[in-house]
Image (cartoon, rainbow over all chains, first blue to last red; front, side, top):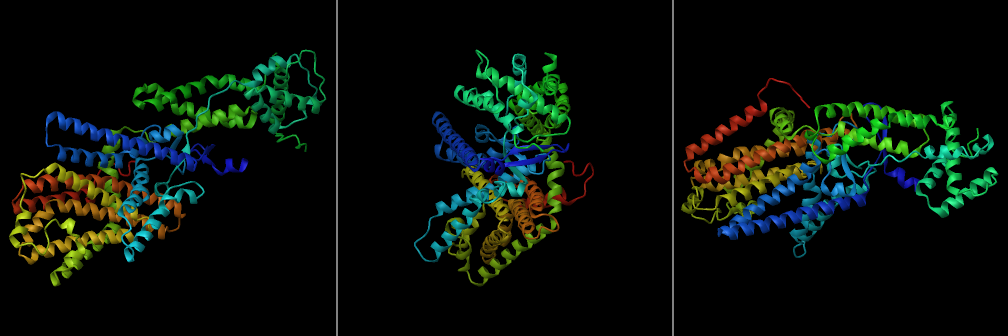
Amino acid sequence: MADSASAVERQLVTPEGVGLRIRLGQASQRAGAFLIDISIMAGALIALTLMALGAAWVTKMQAGEFILTVWLLGAFLLRNTYFISFELGARAATPGKRVVGLRVAARDGGRLTANAIFARNAMRELELYLPISFMFAGGGEGGVDSWVYLLGVVWSGVFVLFPLFNRDRLRVGDFVAGTWVVQAPKQKLLVDLADDGAERLARFVFTDAQLNAYGIKELHVLEQVLRVKDRKTMTAVAGRIRNKIGWTPQAEEHDLDFLSAYYAGLRGRLEGQLLFGRRRRDKLDVG
Amino acid sequence: MARLQLKSYRFRAEREWDWRKLERLLERMEKGSPADLSDDDLLEVPVLYRAALSSLSVARATSLDKSLIDYLESLCARAYFFVYGARSTLWERLSGFFAHAWPQAVKSLWRETLISAAIFLLGVLAAFMLVRHEADWFYAVLPQAMSDGRDPSASTEALRATLAGAKDQPLSVFATFLFTHNAQIALLAFALGFAFCVPTVLLIAYNGMMLGAFMALFVGRGLGIEAGGWLMIHGVTELMAVILSGAAGLRIGWTLVMPGDRPRLDALAEAGRTAGTVMGGVVVMLMIAGLLEGFGRQLIESTAIRYSIAFASAVIWLAYFYLPRGGRSGGR
């Protein structure tokens, strides 16, 4: 779990010199976003064709040529501007990327330039359209042609699968443009648990020894438990803590109240130590 | 009660309002365009962003509220993406591109451009000689479908007829097809550079050979001058675009092979930006070429006018790219 999380987490140092942790987009997300985008493009093209048909029918024009023109131009515009125009926006993401929560960013932490976006999408020619053309080209009837065809498919396939073979999940376009695709950060500010814990702490009195039982790692686990508020888990965790610190339950003591109060007490203690330069990693860290 | 208030809680209470404000601004900006916001708001974002960054640093050192740190981290990253994201208006970007970025990028690729042009000319010469020597080579270079009746088996009169304008043909389909086709070829020449230059070189040389074979056929029938006009009215623009896209591809492939004293990835990223800029403009060039080919060539039948348009476009493009210009340089 920890390994797979760190595999997709990278440090991005802002020009102000503060390191931000960002998570890279996973291959599955990238593929999902791409499928959505492709479907949108296909849908738009179909809609365009239908509209052209309708217009031709209403005006009783020479339908064939008109539709061909609209279709050629529409396909070209979609193929070459869809990705670029969306990624140039404030959210630096196509609709597909937005749905799965991804965005494009510059790898060096600097500004994401229009040139980079153009370069990363012009490379789709190599990664996407070339293999597709190969697929439709057909294999011939044996002999040298078939071998050339096979080599072409393998060769172009290398570029399609590029993102799977490097650490940062870069596709060829990302390499060339100096960009990467990261998960768009989005997190709500939750209530501070120490806030309501502090009220309850008035009713619970923990000794120093009792507050010294745990470290930061356990504090964060407890925070998670309190946020999820699953009754069974809380009962189990409260039981474990009571055991460890030798706490005798008072009459009518609720698990939530106890945990909340202990959280506030523990955090106060650990943060106090933090101010004196002591960061206690976990309960085993007693140095 | 006061005894129980944590420092980290007070820390949060004092700054929370600013964070929320930044979050609201970011939300509005991500939904709409930056133009929806007042100037005050826009000026405030960087200030709030830096305040949030400093909050994050303090929180990391003093607070153990994991959700708070995670929140600040994500808020800072969002604000960072906005503050350092691409966000000039389309118009500013376009004018900056055509006034400075594009010609500059083209100029910086002059070495690759020369090589690309040399390869192209080599292709032209080779095919020209081959076809002049033995007409059957024509079929090896130009597939039947592309030559569209313009092959050695056609009579001289038929060939002459193909060079005339065609007022009654559907021009728009033709122009659209030419433009999209050529643009795709150019983009391919660029993208193929990533495979260590080789396919790009082949593609450029092949494009040159098609031209050479075509010219050899018409020169053989004494139609060289007319055919030149027929081709060059748009060909100057189009061939320059193809050569430039080849140059962009070469730059990328060459950087991949010889990154110099920088890490390969960094060198590649920089080369990619320059080459990407060139390619952005090349698509526009091809659009112009497509218009000239689809409309200009079909409507203008005089060879002299065709040549003068060709000459003028050559002068204009070269002056645009390579003449020194005043004003700011390297604006972005």
